Image (cartoon, rainbow, N blue to C red; front, side, top):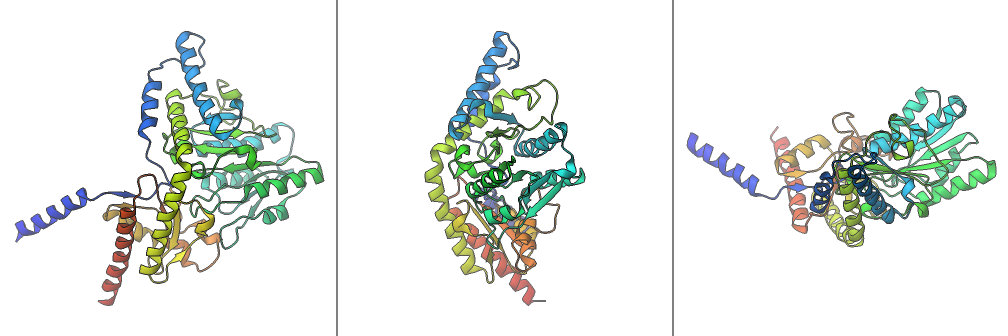
Length: 412
């Protein structure tokens, strides 16, 4: 009997191993492209410091500037406007806290500065504004509507003579809703003309460049945060694009690299991988957007028909094409994620930076509605390797979880 049991367990383990593992957490991190890995391996052979004047240093510097130029070509900005950082979190910190530091060094008093963001921003943005509040600055947190949209009108209502910076993510990292940045920019520029003041607009772009043309000047933003780990590039590198009148003060001091705005020896290999991934996703953008939108809608229909009472958070037709966020009544998001994990399917409940901290999603809570939605939310984020067969299996496993739980409850 023991041998039979062992044999069944071993068979199940082998079958699970053979089954395709389905990764639907691309909003947290994307797998790195093979071409990006190759670009990094080539650049790793350049042993010089890009700040050195000898030949090895010059070669490394040329590679770094070539990577910068490739990113610039996609963004349609100038080379001097791209500052390499360690990732989106650092880019957000440099943009927001760097502007705060610049104003204080320029003689402004914290209590006379006003800042605007939304209540659904990424933790790395919200934490910066909480810090500014602690330092005496005045911060307004704008709430989205029930769809998850932060309207230009809502921003306009909060603008004051003392406003110095507005930070709104281009698309929300949990529900994927795309924000009207161009409209928000027009409202800000109108406010500037009326009051004769300068207000910088910052945006955390996250994975948006995967699916929307990321030409920063057309958006009207002054500061624009990017990260390679969200766009099939390497972890540990990002960029802050500084296009307008904004000029933050450095928050990392040392060797005056990156126009004196970000000290520390630049990572030539990571920059090469970043540039390669950025170019590649730009070429695939239109086709992938269409393909993933169809798969996302297929997933939404399958969950809606198979799970009683499931609620979609946000508005998919106005969201990034790869993201679907739903709440399931009566089942915590963590239970659902772990159940799918055992089936070889990987999703999340919210931003990876928030997993394991808050009990519920601050983004879903801000949308209004029943309290359980924020605790029971699930984020599915598709990617380059996601297939129709994957979606069929995910729907089936989700419905099985509900059925199994219902059967267990009926026995109690």
